[in-house]
Image (cartoon, rainbow, N blue to C red; front, side, top):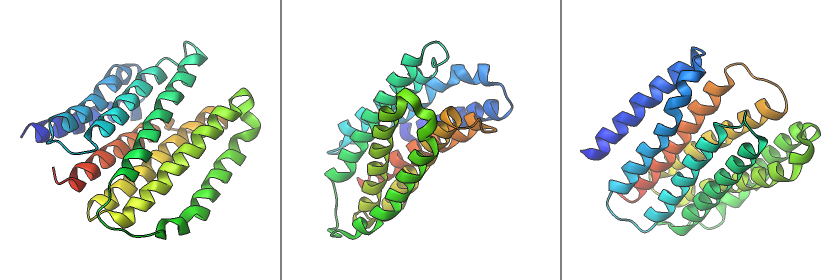
Length: 219
């Protein structure tokens, strides 16, 4: 019952937040942003125990830290770097989590998708490279990590049971889309409705990843 209430609260506040973004009320939306991920943290925290629960909470916590830090990027560039590091840690936790548990041994099928993930990695870095300046190495490292996270989501897509396998893949894809829009908007060209696009895909990503892991563990 509590899980349902927290899920509904996440959906309602998330909808209000995105509505404020799409209507150009970003100053009001700013105050709602730190409230979003804590609802997902609460959903996981009150769920029954499972072996990767602490890892998932760790990933969500650092995602929340990243959210808060990125709220202050207009104050100092260090907030962006710090936020990048926080999300990097979150993605490493997701990679570890995805690799930690499986019910079906699907072999190395996911390795067939390395070229596709590699094309994405090459394309996004090629697009941004000339405008990254001193951010070349940090952004390259981040792009490699999130690409690895996407590849690991393909691994579990073949190893996890339905519907968790599809949910985790959707979550990972949305995360890649969100981070790609953020990077393009920051380093390449200003995109219309960028905040809405970044946050709608980001919130969808976090929700689907949490949902997939809870479904996987039959919570």
